[in-house]
Length: 345
Ligand SMILES: [Zn+2]
Image (cartoon, rainbow, N blue to C red; front, side):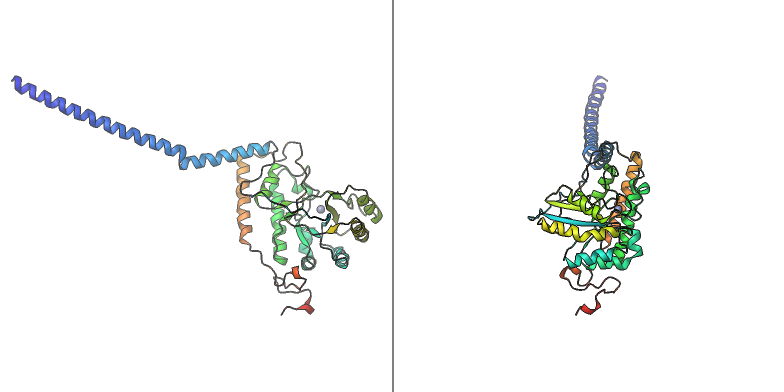
């Protein structure tokens, strides 16, 4: 009996030990699996989501503080400083009936300038857009309707929408997607950190000015007053001069030859703006950002902007045959040519 009862006890003990060892092993394996899972959660896929949402909310907080943030996707831009003092003549609000007169004066002096066009005006005068383009001037984007109340109404989406609309119009006329943008009235007090962030993200360059002709300080500013204002302004090595070629700016046209003569006498070169010219950008207003939207609205807006950027990239830059760079005639996307006498071979 004793032997009989002792043997099963030993067997039971052995079984118990084996079961215990097995359970401990299973527990260790489970523990290791749990640790792996924990590690993956920290460093794996979940971490990417966490990181990106952290970044967005962090970005939102910083933009709400009114800080200018440069998007990660943008490389640091480099600019070329001209050796000779240079003036960049800029004409806003056209094209209009004044534009051909401006073009004529510029042509006579072999000067290339920059025209920040309003989409609505470009739509009404596609032939003038073509003339400006073919003459080799730079075309910039100046929104679609220039209405401050709509553009700066505490929401950058309307500004953004108008930039896209104008770009599509200019693209349909001469195949360009202007990278240079001038905010109506300038960026100062109009732009907050959110506006700058999205424009930077899309690769646009905002271009304010460092000399104002004050030709739009009221209606019909007389030509001699415009000239006097320019002559009394501080000179920089690079001057970005604000003028207008909108409908009511006949006086600017009248003043233009004297303005050109003034800069020539001072030894200035004339050049069109490009993306390698260091832009003049007003600092952000010290006031709080104008965009009081919630974080959710911000994310929604970023989505919309990103979609538009993708659409924009899909539009290839189609160089018209014989682009005006070499002074030859240009055949535009619609097959028209403004200089048929110089038809291409
Ligand atoms: Zn304007």
